[in-house]
Amino acid sequence: MSEKSAHRSDLPADLPRTGLPENLLADCGRCFGLCCVALPFSASADFAIDKPAGQPCPNLLADSRCNIHQTLRTRGFPGCTVYDCFGAGQRVAQVTYQGQDWRQEPSTATQMFEVFRVMRQLHELLWYLAEAQTMPKAEPLNGDLQRTFDDTELITRSSAQAILGLDVAAHRGAVNQLLLQVSALVRAGVRPKKNHRGADLIGAKLRGADLRGANLRGAYLIGADLRGADLRLADLIGADFRDADIRGADLTGSIFLTPSQIAAARGDGATMLPSVLTQPGHWPRSGK
Picture 1: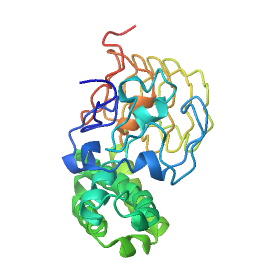
Picture 2: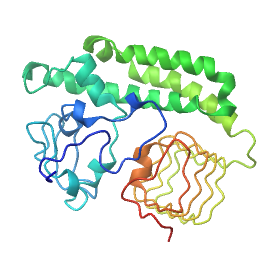
Picture 3: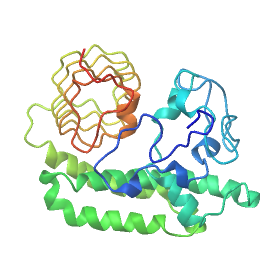
Picture 4: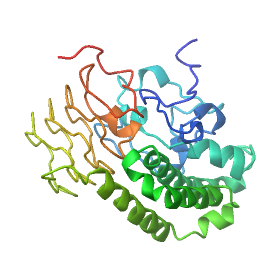
């Protein structure tokens, strides 16, 4: 297959597969390149150019394939290789709009892009709720987790108008309260637990640090040195791992860690991950 015609099937470049439901994995072959159009990006270490929301990326082909898919990193688009819609793209394309491409019906484009941005948030919540149900210590909450998952799943199957009418912030807040209870149960046996929620740890020297059961929700770990760190049972929801060095780190049992976070970090064959995640394809296989 040539570089120009390479299709973005199953998962975006570099994102690892997981043991969670298939409908929460991006299937770009069933989408219309929504993330390549709906979302903005700015020239930076992650993207080579500026692109406003609603404007197709110049690398997006007419058949929704990426013109530089196999060389995104070397062309200055590593941000594309780690973006994860959690399956929201194909849900919008095939369920909400029943296969109707925004190119064929330009009048739906603006609405479709807005729906995609909401759907992506809903699918991220589904990811966390599904993962929570795999945690033995969270079993007392399984009933609530399943009901909340089902309620959220039902919303994703609503009309475009209903999805856009959803108070996303309120829904996220309600789900987050449940996920906080899950986190407390899973990390209950770890002493002491460090609280770095939302902390600025950019470039922090944390090599070999004991971060077992730590609260790292929303922490900024950009470029942090976490080589050999112990992150077992840490709550990592929303933590920014861009260019963080996690070679040899132990993330076994860490919770709410996503493929996108892992793909954005620098790991190797010695990095130990939660059971629901596998190593990204661009990581070196051997530990260093």
